Image 1 (tube, rainbow, N blue to C red):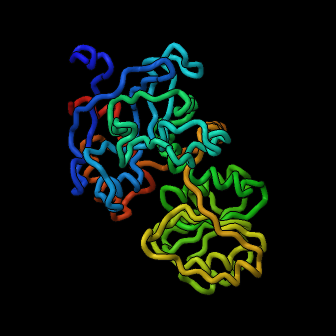
Image 2 (image 1 turned 90 degrees about the horizontal axis):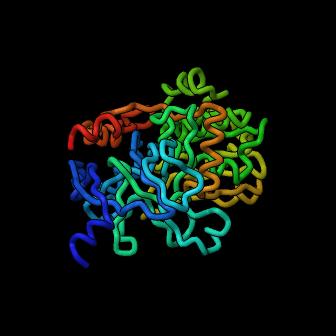
Length: 363
């Protein structure tokens, strides 16, 4: 293939990438594929910073392949559509989450759960996908098959809405699947961070009673007065924990740090569900007593993100109820400082990069 022919199959892109496990991000020129018949091209406006971005750029799992352009929760404007595209037109707002492709034929894909496809292609990957590395949203443009983009509500802030494509769907999906979205039920939310504060917002929008469970007493005012939670329990206060025993229909546990699960199980009513969204330590087994599960017919489950159909449902629900993440919007050249702050938990509750206004000037 000639150089001219090869150039016709790619288009220039620009972003910030990590080149090694130091995790330091810096300007990076790369290429995207040209827009295909089923593709849309998006100019990225805002991209959230997920904690998994930090894990990947610093190779905490030992499997990262560099260079890495992170970012899997972003909103933009459609600038080009393929001839077979049906749900987007140029000028529409669109958003992309954690994945950009799947096999389309397995059991998971057939029931609109592409996120559980064993051949799912993540928005930015740790591995080579079909010989081509995928790059994420810390960049100016992306080309993606229309199936893996969602229509973004006009009334939502694109900055506040960007984290919904990861954090939002990650709490929404298990709440819907496990019946923790029914009005009048009592939901517990463990951890008041990027996921937890959105679980509170969705829970209240569903008409539920919500209790936040945290190790930090100082978050009580934030949880109740600003986010609208009904009550607050300090998990290190045995008296408060004892008073809450057997009161919750379900718990969304967003904490990745090691913490005692048996104490959370005790807070559940019979048939209660403890849904784990964080992985405290991939190498250390979780200690768990089975007797409380047996005596209360209780359930422990896990969940990750959601399929494309459910993601569109989530963002439409967020638009109807004006749900957005609480964010700190930053310029692109602040990203390395933001990563250091994120590692310390110094953000309420999500950093979002203003790609549209601050990336191009650094090219």
